[in-house]
Length: 168
Image (cartoon, rainbow, N blue to C red; front, side):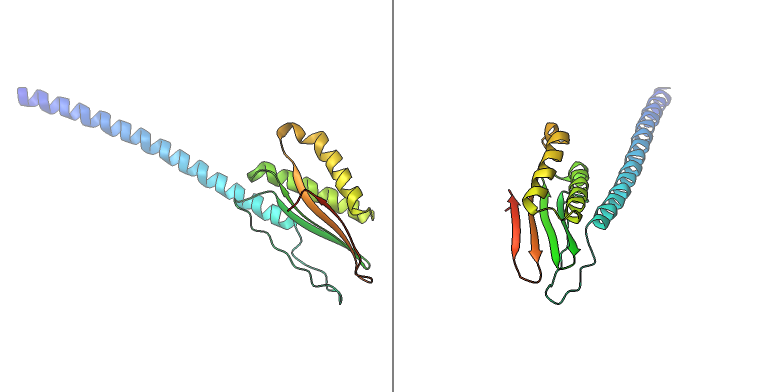
């Protein structure tokens, strides 16, 4: 009888341990699925972000232009862009404070603003000022800011106008 009781107690303990292991396994499986889903979404976000920066560069006899971007995480706040209008090349380099998805969203808005203002043939200092006005109205409460170098190169004369907005 003692042996039967011990066996019954041991069986109950094993059953409890098995149930605990099964619960832990189920939680691990759910966590793994959520992580894989999130990594997939971040890969998509990276692809979308990379599609926002130029990957095709102008062919011009007085210009050799190329750039690439590699984020520290899946997505980030680094940015560059250019607009070629005849013999005038507008370009920018910048960085959003922070990393990850919030920085990438601010990066997207900043490049959109740059492109819009450059196509209006606005001077670099005015572009910086208007981007700053827009960004401080919408992102200053979140501590997000952007440093940028904005240039306008006249490809005929080689004259460069630029505005350095805190970018090293």
